[in-house]
Length: 86
Image (cartoon, rainbow, N blue to C red; front, side, top):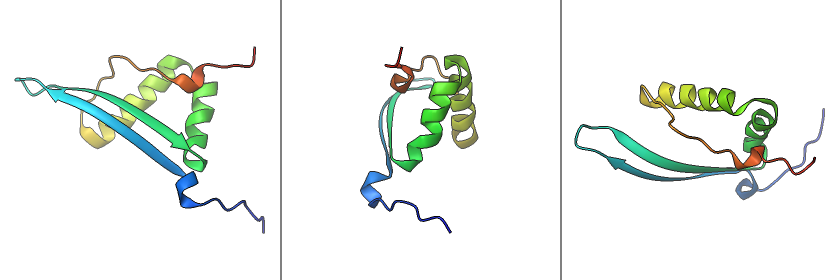
């Protein structure tokens, strides 16, 4: 048995902020900021470091489409992709 570090719940969380507008034709335009802390962010950090920006964008589109129906991401920015180790 491996003993894992036990972190309090507030150290392992996902915070999401969404600003959205719907036009007269029913199209939704939204800006979403998601911040991952602790273990929930490990998969996203790995993907951001090992996938291209286009691969990550397609992955997010698929994820949102499974939950919301047809989703197209116009733009996406991934701050964790900015590497500081040159």
